[in-house]
Amino acid sequence: MQKKKNNKKKASKGQGSAPKKTKATNQQVMVKATGGGDHGFLDPMTGLSKVAQIYAASLANPTIDMEAALPSFPAMMTRKMHVYSKGVFSTGTLASGNFGWILFDPLRAAVQDLDCVDISLTTSTSTLALQTVPVVGDALFAFSNSEYLAASIGVTPLAQFRLVSACIRVRYIGTNLNEGGQLVGLMDPNHGSLAGKTFANFDAYDESVRFPVDKKWTMISWKPVEASDLSFVSAFPAKGNATYPMGFAVQGPSGVQIPLEYEVYANFEFTGTNVRQKTPSPVDTLGFDAVHAITATGDIGSPHQKDPKAHAAQTTKAAGAYLHRVGSKPHPKSKSGWDTAGDILKGIGGVAGSILSFL
Image (cartoon, rainbow, N blue to C red; front, side, top):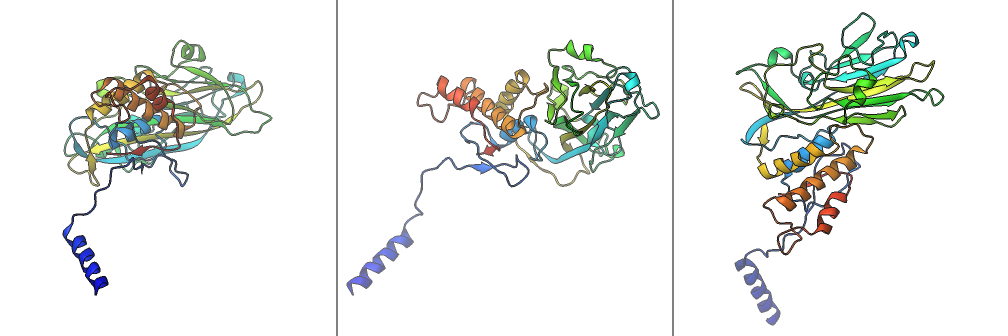
């Protein structure tokens, strides 16, 4: 009888009491930043909201579909779309100097029927490093796999779009015997055209970087430089010399034309009366400012050969450290409400395979 009495008391206590509260932990929530099964984790103690973390990661690594959005005012419903184009290009004829090029216009990648990539062929005869005039047999234009057509874009009720992030990357895919030459990459700092520029023109920019031609991916990520780059648009840059703000010029080794592989990626938000499949785009003005403070002065926008996953993690950590240091949010580990130098350096230096978020 005593045993039954005790059981009844325990049951009564369980029914009448509220669920036991547990102390919140630093639970790590994974964000799609690796695109496959090789998912890693990043310390979520950054102070950035989920949308700001994804935005920072997408600017550094646009190759992955993270459904990124701009965390700017106002909050709205938008459709997120990840598009790309992939292919092969080559340096031109030996008689013209063995020059090759690839140019990319991210805005034109928003639709499938406007060329967004201009590449050289083995028959290209331009003696300049870059060429956008469509001479027969001299250049090839490529398109993205967007679901929209140019006729779908315009003023209401048609769709409008804004570019969230984009990148171009290239690598050599020929034999080890013919591997050689050099390439130089650039995103014009004012988003001007690269049409007709030579190697010497590229070298005049602080943002340009030369690399030996090899089998490593060399990548340039797009970044906004003006307020208009963050706005929704309803028209496209004109084809020709007024477009193509980013790309690579290539010169092959003496006596050998070389093939290279390219990939371009872009992430967009679409809005408009007839746009379907919209999801929320929340606002985080502090996180938005922190991300732009880091990307405006960092290596996004300059050519590099970093691992994209690590670069995305590092960019997100750096934005979080910046926010703790100059923003209104205290660092979660700081008893005084301010970062120590060690906390900031640890936040900037940490690198992981993917981006985690918390709210």
